[in-house]
Amino acid sequence: MARLHLHLLSDSTGETLEMIAKAALAQFEDSDVERHFWPMVRSRQHLDRIVEEFKRNPGLVLYTLVNESIREQLEERCRALGVKHVDALDAVTLALEERLGQEAKGRPGRQHAMDDAYFARVDAIQFTIAHDDGIGFENWEEADIVLAGVSRTSKTPTSIYLANRGFKVANIPLVVESPPPENLFTLRHPMVVGLTTAPERLVQIRRNRLLSLNETAETSYVDGERVRSEVSFARRMFADNGWPVIDVTRRSIEETAAAVIRLHQEREGRDRLPQTGPKPI
Image (tube, rainbow, N blue to C red; front, side, top):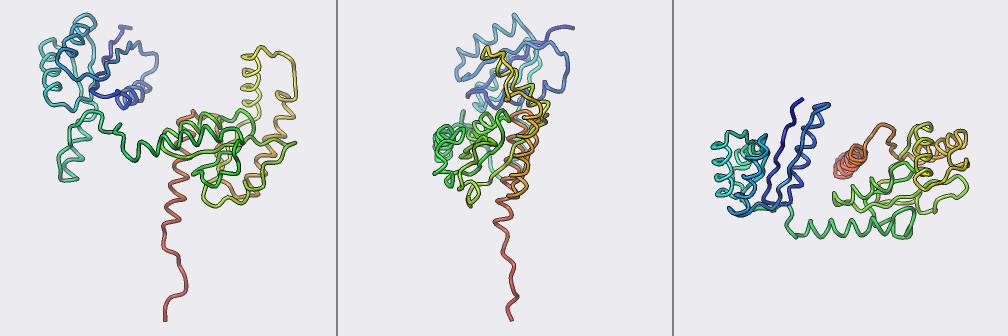
C-alpha cells in the first residue's frame, strides 16, 4: 500500500482541521497516512517553506485558511505542482453565508478569541480540576454536571473533556463502604449522570491500572464477584434517584461526553418549555 502524505495547513491553531482529518481517516482501515501539520500559516515566507515540503512529499493538502491572499497563494502553488488541495470548511462557510445573509469575517483564529466564552471555558476547567474525585462537594451546586460511578469508569477524563467544552463538572467515585455526601441527593442545578460499565471489562481495566503501578497482588479491587457487587450497588443508586445512566463499556471518552452533552441539552430544553397549568376562564 502506497503511503499518503497528508498536509494540514491552518492560519490558526489547526485544532479544527485536525479533528476533521481524524474523523475522516477513521473511515479508512489499515491506511498508511503520514500527517504533516502546519499551524499558524500567516505569511508568504512561511508558506514558501511549506511548499518545499510539498515537493519532497507530494500528497493531499487540507487547509483552513481564512486569509484570502494566503489562500490564493497556496491554491496557485498546489495547482502548479499538481497537488490535490481541499478547503475543509469552504462548503460549510458558503452554506452559512447563504442562509445567514452575511459574509464570513475572514479573521484567522476567530474561534479562539479571548472573549467571554473563552474565559467561561477557563473557569469551567479550573472548577472541574478542583472538584475531581469527590473533592469540594460543598460547591457541587455550582456545577453544570456531576458524574458518579465506581472507580475506573472514565469519570475524570470525561470531566476534563466536558470542561473543555465549557461545562463545570464535578465527579465522585461510588464506594460501597463509604456513602457519598448527602448533598449529592439534593442537588437542584447540576444534572447528575451515572457512569457504568460491564464488570468483566472493569476488572480488566483495573488489572491494567495495577500493572502500570507495578502492583501484582490480587486484591478485592480486581475480584470479579466484588466488582459485580460494586456495579450493582451503583446501578441501584442511579435507579433510586432517577439519574440518567451511560454505559461506557464500548464508548470512547469523546462518545461518552457527547452522550452527556445530549442529555444536558435535553434537560435544558425541558426546563425551557412553558409550564402547563389550568386554563384561564
